[in-house]
Length: 467
Image 1 (tube, one colour):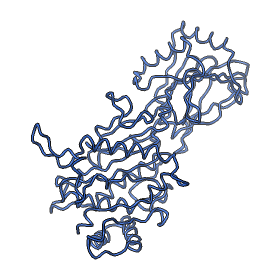
Image 2 (cartoon, rainbow, N blue to C red; image 1 turned 60 degrees about the horizontal axis):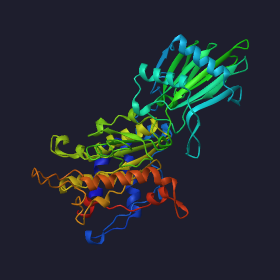
Image 3 (tube, rainbow, N blue to C red; image 1 turned 90 degrees about the vertical axis):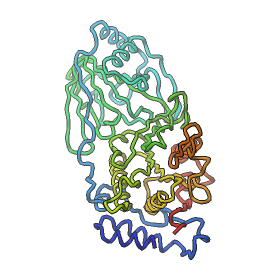
Image 4 (cartoon, one colour; image 1 turned 120 degrees about the horizontal axis):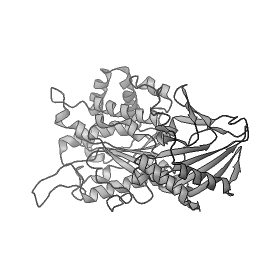
């Protein structure tokens, strides 16, 4: 009966919604018919390997499914955040030039020489200190912190010096997309010595930006911008044997390879990252931030740029009476389509990220659980090649209600009964599920990846079993 009503409502909508109807048809073919709820404790959902992909990373395919979502044809970020001349005081500039001229630890790479100071992260994930940062370079870092009001969480701890000399010395096209860079940080590049032109090429459009870098000038590029822009310095840099130094000041740490943004409602508000409020719900291996999105309209896809992991916790607020139609009904089909539109837009902006979806969790209110069950039903049947689902069944009791152990059901001091939100143990469990989703796909379960195993697990739906 539920499936019949879904199909009827879908047929009334535009063609873009028929993708869901196709998913239901595939689901019906592979799901046995149960005559009563008693013999239906779980519902098997076909895995991604059993069905065709509903969505593709290809923007053209996404646009054909949801015509109201434009392809990424504009630049989400600017090529540089700032460009300033005469940055260093004369005394400090003279001291750093003297240091770089007398330094004998350069390594030849292509047509330039490179030296690294401070923290560097190897491909193996280990963090090593190659060379202590000299005081004069630390003074420059302090100047940058002061001038640009750098967040203390993103203080500079890595400096790369590049030495260019002669007409053949150049910088090939590249983007600084090191996975160990803090996604909320900036890369500050100071140019000393001979002047040059740096070219920025958009990866989204055909646009090109050219900046003149004079002696003692500095540019600031956000880490996010590196996803959409490349930069280069074409030869000849100089017609004579002049020398130019490029100093890049960065924020790196091995935990940033697991950088994670958590978008969610009040149930994710108290999930803390490492050293945040003296807690570490997600462990020291993960860095990131939380973004409040109490409703679907609050989700801003641009917040996700730069993060290697995107966790979207689906809240229940859009299914409450406050958002009902004039006749008092909730348009679950439209609500799901609005949510899916946001997620696909994020995927277009962040094709490099790993997506984890936390479905709507059970509550102590049956009417809300019925709506949540239908939303989750859509969510699981549309499971595809770019997201992994968390297990929401473990929060429910045998009656498919929020388990007392995980809910904040009764506050003795105030007498208030909270029938929706997670309690301390519930938040801890949700934190553990998120942590496993971020870290575990790197590991193996037997001969299979953890992601492959979790992708094929079964899910149950309270609203459907109660029908």
